[in-house]
Length: 315
Image 1: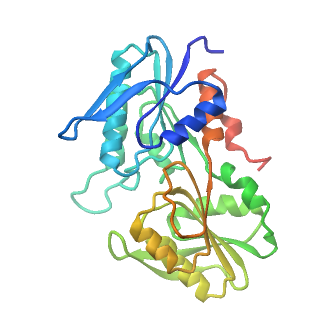
Image 2: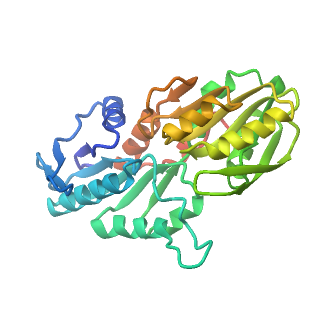
């Protein structure tokens, strides 16, 4: 068991989640001043002694992504220079994960750049949930604990009547995640083939699987403008589905996304609080990831295995 003091700090991206994690672990939230100079530069000062401590810094790199990313990097640097023993970057939502390869000429691999920045700033390990691409773990030269949001959704989904249930992926990229949900719920699986027509527009082209007379769970890791979800849900509804529930780990929704959802065939959105979720006039259920992250933090701090956190009631 670790003899180091455990301290949890938070940037400004998701303080309520950080406080929930602290409440779960019965530890106080670390005292730090995180503000901005008039020109927008981030100012950080750790207001307590952290020499030789085990630090967990909670910060989602959601919008404004650049600002929240810089906050995290600067806080890590401040902690390193204050002689923290170990710094774990707890990133419930890992931004820039979509840019994970060169899919056209002269574009960056920004996910790798962000991984390099985290290591360079002084992070010793990363704890995150539902990366956009699982291979992102290989971009880091430090340990990465990658948790799955399915364990958070389990109780809600298991209570559903799965007699007429089917799980669909809104694109090929989420097919593996959808397959895991289908195995967990013992129901049919399908997916939608899409074509991206712009940064915020998507065209659903083909449907694999039969949603006719089914209650469909549309599973994805994140949604921002809801283009993929809306295109897929409309095609599935046209194919005879009864009710469509979207299950999304990271509801990084903006005004465009909410507007589209209100006009779509999606009946309900179930998401988590990995990012702050704005209250909008759309049927939505928000599940908390605080116990999942809190338990992972406890086990990492005590040098215990986190493997059991990947298992869901025997699945």
